[in-house]
Image (cartoon, rainbow, N blue to C red; front, side, top):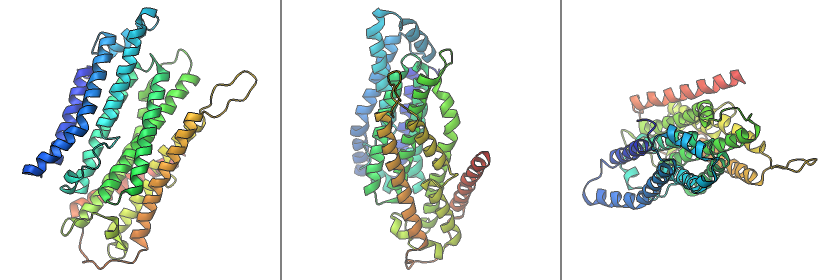
Length: 382
């Protein structure tokens, strides 16, 4: 069942549906009806794209089992008569991967629909985006890894364009975002875009540098670099718990300006927030630094093929992707640095001194400890 294409898509849609129901459970009456209608309009085209890709891929391969799809596509790849089927399979793959990632929220087509986010805590809002993104990346890797050997260059280009779109959208929205929930939302999206760029670069390296007899599996790259992505998300979860712990007993913390000079009257919580923001900013040794640095190195190692006797030049497309990635990463770092300065050096607001919520604060400190241990482990290996 786990290798059945229709079963995977059904589970994916079920997870997204349950996730949305949890997000909107606090809404009532006309308000909930309006939110559900907006969500349906935003996501229905993406679901149709995803299902169309499933039908095309399963029809071209004459099976719904991923292992059988891989074998059938490989066996028919040498036959000239199978060319239309190969095109249908490639189009199906493009629609599945694009539909799954955008349906998961990596292209925030329903980002202006802020009403559900206003009714939930920061932790709930972060989990509402983390769960779909994690499931979407998992579905993408499971599907792509089965057909990657059939047309590796097309998979590489598909991941290239998807990462370019995701990083550009995240960077653009981060410039204008003014609320904490939106900032955390976009940091999650940007980190997933970096991960897609890494997978695209790995596909290129395997296609050009691997031995012909070597088995190509994108799952190897996911196992190596997924811990760094997960610890970035751990830092985001810790920051969400920090915000909820402060606003649990009084008014919620919605805007960064509400934390001006926080470290002067909440030293422990303020220090935890500064550490988490510094880790998300990408200081050397952090998970964000490890992931971003590795992607930039891989992208700059990609060169266009050159004629004999001439030097290969940097690949123009991947050079552009590396520039977009650097700009996007710089915007995240600038946003986190601005928040650190606001917490540590801005003139404190007149606020009631209160104890943060104990349970959420402990989760926040646990996230800080886990992220720091990962950074220490990486520094020792380095």
